[in-house]
Length: 439
RNA sequence: CGGGGCAUAGCGCAGCCUGGUAGCGCACCUGGUUUGGGACCAGGGGGUCGUAAGUUCGAAUCUUACUGCCCCGACCA
Picture 1 (tube, protein in one colour):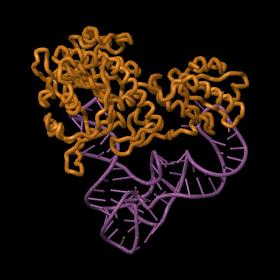
Picture 2: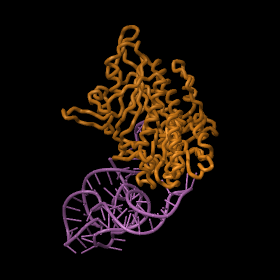
Picture 3: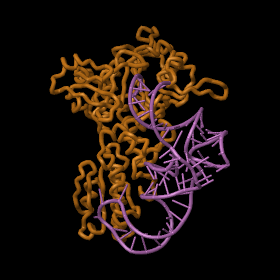
Picture 4: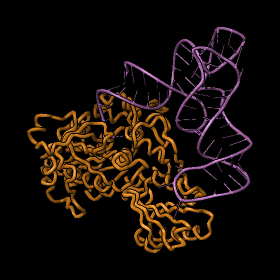
């Protein structure tokens, strides 16, 4: 993409309304614009990152055996009346009346709807276990939206729902999601720690929040420091195997958010030099809730004995849009964002130091073409701006690599390759630079 | 929802107290000089001051109501 052909409205100054770093940087880097409280438009650069995160979440869900579908954002109130949550959910649910005076709502979550889909077509225990997920916009009419995309009212969430014939099987489904979450966050460049969680309004008795550590996190967390850098299962993970040991390895160690924290237990279970207390951001939450919805909504399957029994369910959420904020909180410096390669909007920023200079333009055009044909995502800053402005913009938007091409270097047959994360710059030949970038 | 704050050009702000019809920096447009870490000079465009009412000869400025946004707290992916 040529920058002269793109839409990247960067801001030099910090917008007054943005208080935390991820919000400021997302606004400054031209990723989002606010439309009303807690509601944002995703500008091209932000959307690219959102899509990349979404793709990784999708891959890991699929790998773990979940199946993607897509449910609507608007739901009929009838389903919620059936589960008993229509009145219970409160003002956080945005209620809408259509032209026929039917009560509708903008879905804050989809347990009811997915249970309805399930019960209409699944009849036998032989079809289980089943895990259905979608990645869809949600709306929760938060009393106080804040921190930009981190706590918006409208947000993109991946929510998965498991269906099992009994609790033992449901726990296996839960473990699969547990491992899938570890892998997902790891691929996003995040160190997410599963922590025992309150089950909240959804109910149930087995639940973990996945927390990433960040100074600006909303909740205070306490855990065994070994959890932070614990190895994550690799690509060869067998989701059909017994995952409980992998899960227990983590859940056996102390980890709790402030509302679940027990100072005495913390001190008893964790040696003093391993006690970590920090701030954290919740990026995922998994629940096992048993037959709560299946009983209320009569989602039953025939068991081996031919008798119908309510299915055991779990739900598994990842705040996809929130993750952008989380990643930025965890990865930035005073100059801007530092994207992990896996989610960077482009792999390389190509900086033409002297647009209009024939030799430099030609060299950049050549490099640009070669990177593109090699499948490297490149953002080419071909604007007629001064070098400083281009460097600043590129640092701000945080692409992993900057390839700097100027007349001075070209005379000596070199270009400069800069690593955004380390700041390290090397002068190499054009060919060497292309090779290093995978072209 | 309780408490606090703000609302003036795309962004950041001044002007308001002590009413007289709007200004600065950045950004934008034109011309020129520049060009390796957010250039400089000259010229120019853009707002009637969140909305509505009131007080007044006159309101960005004073009064009232409303709306929007931000921050702290309680709640949430």
